[in-house]
Length: 219
Image (tube, rainbow, N blue to C red):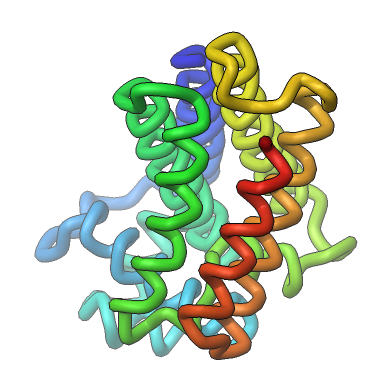
Protein backbone atom coordinates (compact mmCIF):
# COMPACT_ATOMS: atom_id res chain seq x y z
CA UNK A 1 0.00 0.00 0.00
CA UNK A 2 3.01 2.27 0.28
CA UNK A 3 2.82 2.29 -3.52
CA UNK A 4 -0.49 4.18 -3.30
CA UNK A 5 1.10 6.96 -1.32
CA UNK A 6 4.05 7.11 -3.71
CA UNK A 7 1.64 7.42 -6.65
CA UNK A 8 -0.13 10.32 -4.94
CA UNK A 9 3.16 12.06 -4.15
CA UNK A 10 4.42 11.54 -7.70
CA UNK A 11 1.19 13.08 -9.02
CA UNK A 12 1.77 16.09 -6.78
CA UNK A 13 5.39 16.41 -7.92
CA UNK A 14 4.37 16.30 -11.59
CA UNK A 15 1.75 18.99 -11.00
CA UNK A 16 4.22 21.21 -9.13
CA UNK A 17 6.95 20.75 -11.77
CA UNK A 18 4.49 21.52 -14.58
CA UNK A 19 3.37 24.71 -12.85
CA UNK A 20 6.93 25.82 -12.11
CA UNK A 21 8.01 25.23 -15.73
CA UNK A 22 5.20 27.50 -16.93
CA UNK A 23 6.23 30.37 -14.67
CA UNK A 24 8.15 33.38 -15.94
CA UNK A 25 11.91 33.21 -15.33
CA UNK A 26 12.71 36.07 -13.00
CA UNK A 27 15.06 36.64 -10.13
CA UNK A 28 14.37 34.39 -7.19
CA UNK A 29 11.96 36.03 -4.69
CA UNK A 30 13.31 36.35 -1.18
CA UNK A 31 11.90 36.94 2.26
CA UNK A 32 9.34 34.16 2.58
CA UNK A 33 9.15 30.38 2.93
CA UNK A 34 7.21 28.71 0.06
CA UNK A 35 6.26 25.76 2.30
CA UNK A 36 4.94 28.10 4.97
CA UNK A 37 2.99 29.98 2.33
CA UNK A 38 1.46 26.74 1.06
CA UNK A 39 0.36 25.88 4.59
CA UNK A 40 -1.07 29.36 5.17
CA UNK A 41 -2.89 29.33 1.84
CA UNK A 42 -4.22 25.81 2.39
CA UNK A 43 -5.80 26.86 5.68
CA UNK A 44 -7.41 29.87 3.99
CA UNK A 45 -8.84 27.76 1.17
CA UNK A 46 -9.94 25.10 3.63
CA UNK A 47 -11.81 27.59 5.79
CA UNK A 48 -13.28 29.87 3.12
CA UNK A 49 -13.27 27.89 -0.12
CA UNK A 50 -11.64 28.81 -3.42
CA UNK A 51 -14.06 31.49 -4.60
CA UNK A 52 -14.35 33.24 -1.24
CA UNK A 53 -10.57 33.44 -0.80
CA UNK A 54 -9.30 36.45 -2.71
CA UNK A 55 -5.76 36.97 -3.95
CA UNK A 56 -5.48 39.87 -1.52
CA UNK A 57 -6.43 37.52 1.33
CA UNK A 58 -3.56 35.25 0.35
CA UNK A 59 -1.04 38.05 -0.11
CA UNK A 60 -1.94 39.62 3.24
CA UNK A 61 -1.81 36.33 5.13
CA UNK A 62 1.47 35.25 3.53
CA UNK A 63 2.93 38.77 3.64
CA UNK A 64 4.35 38.67 0.11
CA UNK A 65 4.02 40.89 -2.94
CA UNK A 66 1.86 40.13 -5.93
CA UNK A 67 4.91 39.79 -8.18
CA UNK A 68 6.48 37.23 -5.83
CA UNK A 69 3.22 35.31 -5.74
CA UNK A 70 2.93 35.07 -9.52
CA UNK A 71 6.61 34.16 -9.81
CA UNK A 72 6.24 31.26 -7.39
CA UNK A 73 2.74 29.94 -8.09
CA UNK A 74 1.59 31.33 -11.42
CA UNK A 75 -2.05 31.78 -10.47
CA UNK A 76 -4.54 31.35 -7.65
CA UNK A 77 -5.86 28.21 -9.35
CA UNK A 78 -2.39 26.65 -9.49
CA UNK A 79 -1.80 27.52 -5.84
CA UNK A 80 -5.11 25.90 -4.91
CA UNK A 81 -4.19 22.70 -6.73
CA UNK A 82 -0.86 22.54 -4.92
CA UNK A 83 -2.60 23.11 -1.58
CA UNK A 84 -5.07 20.34 -2.36
CA UNK A 85 -2.22 17.97 -3.28
CA UNK A 86 -0.45 18.89 -0.05
CA UNK A 87 -3.57 18.10 1.99
CA UNK A 88 -4.28 14.81 0.20
CA UNK A 89 -0.69 13.58 0.47
CA UNK A 90 -0.62 14.43 4.18
CA UNK A 91 -3.94 12.71 4.89
CA UNK A 92 -3.07 9.56 2.96
CA UNK A 93 0.33 9.31 4.63
CA UNK A 94 -1.26 9.59 8.08
CA UNK A 95 -3.88 6.96 7.24
CA UNK A 96 -1.22 4.61 5.86
CA UNK A 97 0.83 5.00 9.04
CA UNK A 98 -2.17 4.32 11.30
CA UNK A 99 -3.04 1.22 9.31
CA UNK A 100 0.49 -0.14 9.62
CA UNK A 101 0.49 0.49 13.38
CA UNK A 102 -2.94 -1.03 14.08
CA UNK A 103 -3.20 -4.43 15.76
CA UNK A 104 -6.09 -5.59 13.55
CA UNK A 105 -7.95 -4.28 10.54
CA UNK A 106 -11.02 -3.62 12.68
CA UNK A 107 -8.93 -1.73 15.25
CA UNK A 108 -7.78 0.60 12.49
CA UNK A 109 -11.35 1.31 11.36
CA UNK A 110 -12.63 1.82 14.91
CA UNK A 111 -9.72 4.11 15.75
CA UNK A 112 -10.17 6.14 12.57
CA UNK A 113 -13.89 6.74 13.18
CA UNK A 114 -13.53 7.56 16.88
CA UNK A 115 -10.55 9.85 16.18
CA UNK A 116 -12.62 11.67 13.57
CA UNK A 117 -15.31 12.42 16.14
CA UNK A 118 -12.83 13.24 18.92
CA UNK A 119 -10.87 15.66 16.73
CA UNK A 120 -14.06 17.48 15.78
CA UNK A 121 -15.21 17.66 19.40
CA UNK A 122 -11.99 19.31 20.59
CA UNK A 123 -11.28 21.54 17.61
CA UNK A 124 -12.66 25.07 17.51
CA UNK A 125 -12.45 24.93 13.70
CA UNK A 126 -14.50 21.71 13.56
CA UNK A 127 -17.20 23.31 11.43
CA UNK A 128 -14.92 24.12 8.53
CA UNK A 129 -15.34 20.49 7.42
CA UNK A 130 -13.02 18.32 5.36
CA UNK A 131 -10.99 20.17 2.72
CA UNK A 132 -11.62 17.43 0.16
CA UNK A 133 -15.38 17.26 0.80
CA UNK A 134 -15.63 21.05 0.72
CA UNK A 135 -13.80 21.08 -2.60
CA UNK A 136 -16.15 18.46 -4.04
CA UNK A 137 -19.15 20.63 -3.14
CA UNK A 138 -17.56 23.74 -4.63
CA UNK A 139 -16.08 22.26 -7.80
CA UNK A 140 -18.55 19.53 -8.77
CA UNK A 141 -18.53 19.23 -12.60
CA UNK A 142 -16.64 22.50 -12.78
CA UNK A 143 -12.92 21.82 -13.18
CA UNK A 144 -11.38 18.72 -14.76
CA UNK A 145 -7.93 18.93 -13.16
CA UNK A 146 -9.29 19.37 -9.64
CA UNK A 147 -11.86 16.61 -10.19
CA UNK A 148 -9.02 14.25 -11.14
CA UNK A 149 -7.08 15.13 -8.00
CA UNK A 150 -10.14 14.45 -5.85
CA UNK A 151 -10.96 11.18 -7.63
CA UNK A 152 -7.38 9.99 -7.18
CA UNK A 153 -7.44 10.71 -3.44
CA UNK A 154 -10.84 9.03 -2.96
CA UNK A 155 -9.75 5.92 -4.85
CA UNK A 156 -6.57 5.59 -2.78
CA UNK A 157 -8.52 6.02 0.46
CA UNK A 158 -10.97 3.36 -0.73
CA UNK A 159 -8.07 0.99 -1.42
CA UNK A 160 -6.63 1.56 2.06
CA UNK A 161 -10.00 0.76 3.61
CA UNK A 162 -10.20 -2.42 1.56
CA UNK A 163 -6.79 -3.48 2.85
CA UNK A 164 -7.98 -2.95 6.44
CA UNK A 165 -11.22 -4.84 5.76
CA UNK A 166 -9.44 -7.79 4.11
CA UNK A 167 -7.06 -7.91 7.06
CA UNK A 168 -9.98 -7.86 9.49
CA UNK A 169 -11.81 -10.59 7.58
CA UNK A 170 -8.73 -12.79 7.61
CA UNK A 171 -8.41 -12.18 11.35
CA UNK A 172 -12.07 -13.10 11.89
CA UNK A 173 -13.09 -9.70 13.31
CA UNK A 174 -14.98 -8.37 10.28
CA UNK A 175 -17.89 -10.10 8.54
CA UNK A 176 -17.23 -11.95 5.31
CA UNK A 177 -20.87 -11.71 4.22
CA UNK A 178 -19.97 -8.64 2.16
CA UNK A 179 -17.00 -8.02 -0.11
CA UNK A 180 -14.18 -5.67 0.95
CA UNK A 181 -15.18 -3.39 -1.91
CA UNK A 182 -18.80 -3.14 -0.74
CA UNK A 183 -17.82 -2.56 2.90
CA UNK A 184 -15.24 0.06 1.90
CA UNK A 185 -17.86 2.00 -0.05
CA UNK A 186 -20.23 1.75 2.92
CA UNK A 187 -17.54 3.04 5.29
CA UNK A 188 -16.73 5.93 2.96
CA UNK A 189 -20.39 6.95 2.84
CA UNK A 190 -20.55 6.81 6.65
CA UNK A 191 -17.40 8.89 6.97
CA UNK A 192 -18.79 11.46 4.54
CA UNK A 193 -22.00 11.51 6.58
CA UNK A 194 -20.10 12.06 9.82
CA UNK A 195 -18.17 14.94 8.26
CA UNK A 196 -21.42 16.48 7.02
CA UNK A 197 -22.96 16.16 10.49
CA UNK A 198 -19.88 17.79 12.01
CA UNK A 199 -20.26 20.67 9.56
CA UNK A 200 -23.94 20.90 10.56
CA UNK A 201 -22.88 21.24 14.24
CA UNK A 202 -24.24 17.90 15.40
CA UNK A 203 -23.69 16.91 19.03
CA UNK A 204 -20.84 14.55 19.87
CA UNK A 205 -23.17 11.81 21.13
CA UNK A 206 -25.02 11.90 17.79
CA UNK A 207 -21.74 11.42 15.96
CA UNK A 208 -20.81 8.52 18.24
CA UNK A 209 -24.19 6.92 17.50
CA UNK A 210 -23.32 6.98 13.79
CA UNK A 211 -19.96 5.38 14.56
CA UNK A 212 -21.60 2.63 16.63
CA UNK A 213 -24.11 1.77 13.91
CA UNK A 214 -21.37 1.83 11.28
CA UNK A 215 -19.17 -0.55 13.26
CA UNK A 216 -22.13 -2.86 13.93
CA UNK A 217 -22.40 -3.38 10.18
CA UNK A 218 -18.95 -4.97 10.25
CA UNK A 219 -20.02 -7.69 12.72
